[in-house]
Image (cartoon, rainbow, N blue to C red):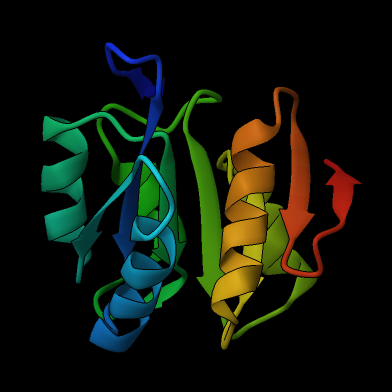
Amino acid sequence: MASTTSDSQTHIRVLAVDDSPMILKLVKMSLSNLPYWHVDTAENATQAQHLWQKDTYDLMIVDFNMPNTTGLELLKQLSPPVSAKNKVIMLSADNGQDLKHQARALNVTGWMHKPFQPQSLIKVANQVLKADHPQWVTDDGQWHLK
């Protein structure tokens, strides 16, 4: 899914969705500084759906708790739907197991507990993107089978 340039460099396309401008800025600053990473941001589900339909993303980083919807509801509504080719990291202050099980059922492959450090986000994003089989990574950097 990642695009390749004529000089064989892979570009990673990321869509970050969060109602907090501060979190979006943190995600964008953290990942945009990596070579060949491009980050688009959306402050709500409507913006996210629009961007998702017009572009192809390798990774979506989505907040669970947003006004008018949840990150899980957004994932259910996306067209085209999230597939195994798209990697998704859920951001949440809630660390409940039920929520994580619901997220896994919607192809979420990573979990970040808010607040988080930029280095943790970079580590989890890289691990999630490198996975070629269905596993689950949390912000402790540990892989867990689904």
